Length: 390
Image: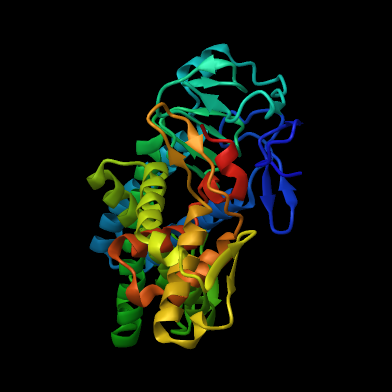
């Protein structure tokens, strides 16, 4: 079924993904991040949090010297506790528009969207699915199937939309997670250096008085001491350090991206739309090249001439980037209506194109590419999302 066609059909907001595989929104609107089904990204997030917390407070902080131990407990414990609170709040808040929260019955299935009657879900600030008048910056999310006030993006890590009601809790979640991982890296590096220089510094806990073998270490001090060999501690430390570095890279780039957005006073949604508009105007001349044709969303070359020169390769690369970016965006008019960009390429192709073309991209491309690659999973990743957001 082609959601972009003008055929007379009654459909829900849907997306065509990879050779006409349909991705449908839930018939029952999601309330918050704990509405079933839970996303596996969300499960992974909480599993990592529990694992890192257990390793930090049960294994590595007890190895620190007496004075540093209590400082680490207070500082790291404060950061982890703050992260837990704001993470739960960001997940639990219903980010829907105020009128949707006031009038909506979440137990009732959403109506079908009749494209023969309406071009877009939201027109003139009225949502034809939620049946309410909404704010100007409200968008209808395909993943939650409801109107979200101040829509920024849909985050699969918290399994909830991020809007004006929970944006700063989401931002605080990312910032506190980044700070916590920095603390954990500092603790791990200190333990590693002291183990190489003077291991006795790490054995100051009174329970080590009964341990004569220097190859034996105690985990989960002081309450539940467990004796293990040095190799076990090293393996756990290396795994935690690797996981910590990976998380820090992902979260650090996400944090930088959102700081950049706040400096520019825009949302993720607005950033993608503006970037798409800029690229569209920049590549008008390239798209008119007689050797480059856009046919059903795929680039084709005429007589092989485009790929035969360095300029041709560069032009083709630019077109690929522009084509994949438009996959995420719509052109929004002053009255809030959206004009569909008829592009159906996959996000994986965009990420590959980003890495192949990174030598000539701007700072904005750097931010956008890393943001999409490390996937805070914005709800714009469905090709026909443009038919859903008004």
